[in-house]
Image 1 (cartoon, rainbow over the protein chains, first blue to last red):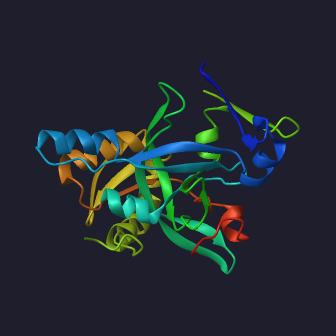
Image 2 (cartoon, rainbow over the protein chains, first blue to last red):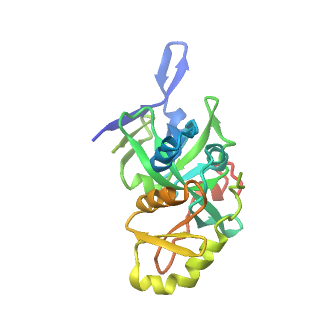
Image 3 (cartoon, one colour):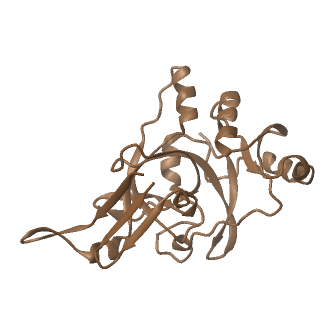
Length: 161
Length: 88
């Protein structure tokens, strides 16, 4: 089972050091690439059509979310159409959003990709870290395949698949 | 290009709701693939249904929905309470 430890460092006069405040401030982020699902990529390849380039950013691991989400602007750039609608609790009660198919790749973790995720399309891109936007939330639908350990005192988290 | 924030699957969703009672008897727990007002098939996973849909309809909109009595309402508190700046 591949194990990924994400250590959050802060630059100091003595060099980069582990700082628990970084994890507490930004949350458990992981670099992610969102692309079209493999089935669509294969179809486009067979038809000699260009495959949209993957979109890079951060995914925030969100144990409070039942479903994973992908930023709707990223979905729009990939040109993927919705496959369903889902009801979601909002501040003004339940309402509906589109559900999109997506392929998720995590460059920091070799050989771990989620070929097909049905993600809610929402606008989450306003938040940034290191000049990269948060483009996905990983909810409990994805976490159901993982072991996730949040180590607050050390300022690291561990993800195993 | 389709406006991805709009409900482009309204017809398919209505067809699903109109037939859900019958489908609960034959396809309960499965994922049905619906295009326009036609049931294309029932599959054990969303991915299987998507592969079939893309093969048949390319990247045109089609509906994939699990046949269950009561649909789960998604909960993403980070969006709801504004921890992540979102448009809901």
